[in-house]
Length: 388
Figure 1 (tube, helix red, strand yellow):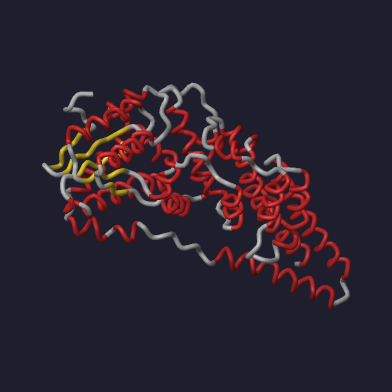
Figure 2: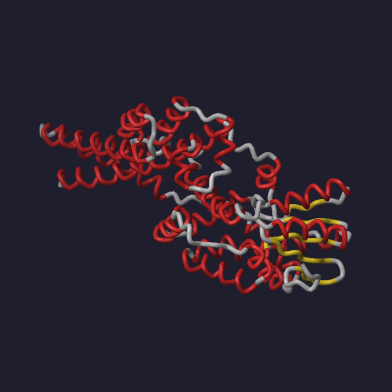
């Protein structure tokens, strides 16, 4: 690649931006040559600690970590992260490189040459949580539809992607079309964060900042702002989104109101209404939770456990039927080390989440919880209508 490439930008004599495609062999070679040529005092890479760990140790998720994901209610978040990774892997298959190969190469070369490394990206979990929080239901549905769809007609010319800034801009625009709120978090906020971190380390000498080529324009624009303005935003951009309290209160209020109403019917001797209400609650919670686990192709015992747990867990906002179903799935069909490794290698969403044991545990948990929530609201509506 010529040295006047659009992807090699000298901000000044002490800062060079190097834009890469995360799935390109050319990018790996470019990173190596630029480190040797530029001789930086510091190498800044578009990575966070968790992404670096996954690059250095790509074995996947062990069963202990999987159990923690279930108990922390992070299944949907991991599914979203994995879906995004699949799209990158699809692009990287023909190039022979895994996503982030050039960033890992930069880390390895820096260690060999004893050059300090700065990780300048925001933690991926915070980014995903902020994106999820910003998206409405329609956007979430559009994102999953785009990510889960198997489109074999999309052919990516990786070298064209790396060299053509207009093509990269077009891809960024596509993100905004699908989910503008997510686009602002995944792209605009990270442009601000990356530039803020670069400004934060400017006093450490000659810096080579290696970032995705799609972030180059945004970073350049943000670097024009005063240093204090850019760095002062970092703490705000690094905040975890606060969970709204109303869903918790609503999920707590529903069983309280229903129990009170059913208790009033029992007090008045209307035991037919009491029996009908209990039957609706038990049937809808159990059926829809079991259906969710069945759609995830869970183990038969996982379906039974999720269905039995749902009428009880729906009365307690701190519990979730999907957790019990996912835990049962983990115990009945435990993933092996190969499953964990393969989970990060599959290019097919179907293989990842319906055939791979790691993905299946997550899907059982997520769809079990979704079914339980649907059962709670539907049962509450029908019971309230009957009581009224």
